[in-house]
Length: 427
Image (cartoon, rainbow, N blue to C red; front, side):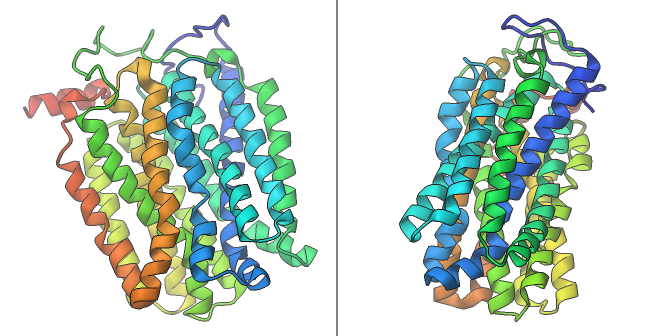
């Protein structure tokens, strides 16, 4: 991928071109770091029932701990995007990995809800800055193939979501405590930060978006609004927020639903949560498509597929086999399709010099909603039961995302030339 994709620019901060091999290794390491990021996030969910039992947390508190860490990701989005347009992206990636790893290591030392929530928030801030930085790097370097590059990052995320619960549950079982996985993942993050320092070339991490791109017949970007805060970023901000509410509302308490409501054992719940990540790995073919078709169509498919799959998961299916299939499908539609497209459409709604802020807007809108999703879902469960909560938050809410797509003006976006030509020809 890294050797075949077209670079969006040259290093503006002093480095010459990197070799294809160096770029390939650097891209692989960034994917590895994001895989670990996903594992670090996902390991908490299947262990939550054990943590809840030890500390006596309520369902509201458990829901906040499950998804509240994403508030840290959200808070990091805008300032990280601003800094990424002005500072070394590689340095920011490394610092962010160190921050979230330290937050992860601290979780087992928590004495109660308050300090555990702080440690989760610190982890979220680091993960948010890292995500913003990585998407800014690929948005600049893989200028017209950014969705395909994001697809590779999505595969890494999906693999992390798949492996995190399985490995985490195995570590907890082997170590006799839920604390073991947090020690291991925290230390692993510090190692990965050191690897990034020596393997990711500055010519890749500091590329300037829109310079020297191949196959782009346009010399200017006057059709893109000068401000990064415009009609399209508003519309896609809404779709990102809906996606965050739906996907993290599902992720945060899904294992608790399976164990508490359907009577699954810990291993079955962990496998179901892992299969969400297997579905998320469809981000690669989705990313390939997203560089070739109108992304609004893909996002509409994502919202409809998520809605229908969640309806079946919470209203119809009760056995493990059915839940495994539906978990995979929700991962496919909510992450493989929606997450992959949301990460790129906001960057395509701003001018190249604002690519960092485009990435930051995605992190802000997606993860503010995600931070509230667990608490909202828990309150809905208290008011209407698991079935009612699934119906409202996971089946009906995606309709709002579909409606927001109608606000988008694709003629005011930075699209690949072939896609732009087809949209322009339709008027």
